[in-house]
Amino acid sequence: MKTRQGIVPAILPAMLLCALLPTGAIAQSAVDAYPSKPVTMIVPLSPGASVDIETRLYAQKMTEFTGKPFLVDYKPGAGTTIGGAFVARAAPDGYTLLSMTPSLAVATLAYSNLPFDPFKDLTPLSLMSKRPSLFIIPNSVPAKNMAEFVAYTKANPAKVNIGTSGAGGIGELALAWFKQLAGITVPLVHYKGGAPSYTAVMAGEVQAVLGSPSAMLGNIKAGKARVIAVTTAERIKILPDMPTVAEQGFPGFEYAQWIGIAGPGGMPAPLVNKLSAELSKAAKAPDVGAKLADDGTVMVGSTAEQFRQHIANESARWRKVAQDTGVKLGE
Image (cartoon, rainbow, N blue to C red; front, side, top):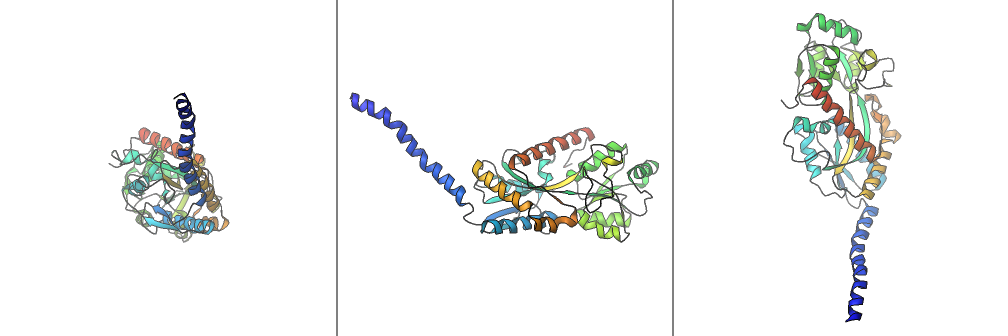
């Protein structure tokens, strides 16, 4: 019995080690072989949007890098939370990814009963790019810069409305923030998308909008509207002489669209590191940047940890803006 009792305790650790080794080996082999089948990249918006166009470029580049298809699919609706929830429920194996936008960073401000936690149920992989907006006014507003626009607004409050691309997003928060900094109280008119808001500002129905460079630069060059500022923290290459909102008397103001790639929560660290490195390489590919340059897009290609920190910073910043301005998204 002593022999048996002595043998059993000695054998148990070895048995446990043997039981664990196959699982670890399989997990590592799966990471090494990734991807071994097609990967789906979910766009949480309708086809044709700038997010879709950019995601398709990344999917093409990842296909080139890995030799396996990266396919784009769509789950639009509810401020990108339908697509976010779909990816959050997926297996954490890297075969379902999400093109994440700022909307998810403020989703908890707009939706009180989300079926998932954007900060716990998704795994940040890489911040891919940042994109500016332009502060655009119609020709009927006699202002050449932000100070003159604010002065005109204060002198003619009943004549000024500012258009948005829709209620409940970061664009609404950005404009509410600007109004607070400028000390103006004018209505926000919510349109169903960027295109109708651009049409409205060119027609003089609203007196300002935040607009996409690629969508509006042609109209601006044609004299149909004017840009008086860019919204990012720094000037942009396509309009190097145009000062930022912050430079024009509103220090700290920054509004940038961005796109990052995330996966389901619980992805193993080796897979996260592998995907992050490949996605970063895709973002920094010269041909990808060249195709997005006309929109003023700045390519990033961050690490997973840098993207996680970016999401946390964005969420905290816009939450404070919502609290300070009293804006309640989704109402």
